[in-house]
Length: 436
Image (cartoon, rainbow, N blue to C red):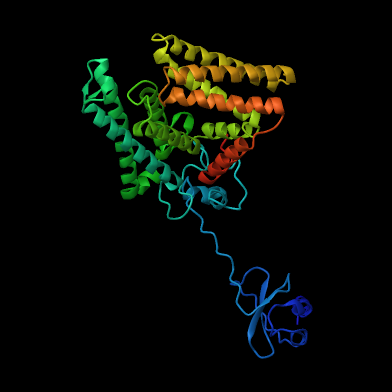
């Protein structure tokens, strides 16, 4: 017997008294006939041996645990395709590491900017992240959601386009067989949904019939960079839906909540997530936002800035029509200015507690008064961008004021932010983005 195997046999004897199996005892363990083998198909630290009666059993060299059942080794990880093709692994020896790191849930070290295989977008974006996921990989669910949203926008816009334009305001409010919207903008809405739908159907069909064109083909870009089709598709969809959603929901024809209203916003948000997965700059910006939002005060301030921006855009159509529209425009500018002042003073540690309380109280009062006028009277008495921005601003400013006056964080906001961040971590890889 070798010294190593003698020590293993002694370890088995010492631990056999604690073994849960009734057929092993201290006396039997001392007279075991050792016929060990270095089987590679066993779990780590497990060895095979035979008892005195010739029956094979297995024991763990580290814990002394014994078992009559053969412990299977952990399944080997199947490496996915590397985004830049086989030449990545063949030439520099990092292809296998990159492939393992790009797998969802991989325990391999995360890639940094220096060893990222993709020089155009974020490392998590290009290739399928697991076997069988296809050339579109983790982008597929987002593209399917975009496909459904495009169809909804196209359908509702086509229904509106089939109606005659209302001649009088009385016809518009009576809800007859006419549309109160500008026909040219309704036709534009049809085009937004139709173009997006056709592009997405074409990409999905190409991924099914000619996957090499979607997963492997590259296009030359400025400054010597290369882009895959999914990069170009993400950029197009983001630009297309940013313009479309801005016109259709802030102007016409989907200014108020409807199926197409929500479909426009879903399409824009999903397009943004595609951009975060595809472009290093957006990936870095999203990481910076998550880091900044870790502080609840910063989180509320960012939400208030966003609400002020949305209210500003929503009020543009009403500035010349009514005093309430002008008030909405002014309220958006004033709250945004005060919020920016608060953020600047806080970042430089120049805000005293009394000044913080005054600023947060003033911002909260402005949002409450603004929401009261704009949503109870006009122009945002019906649900839409202006309505939602008013009440989001009220809730965020109230939360910030409560935190400032009572020095207590609000639990619901912390849970909401954490749940959203956790969802994002499961939706996309948290690999550090490329420096390009």
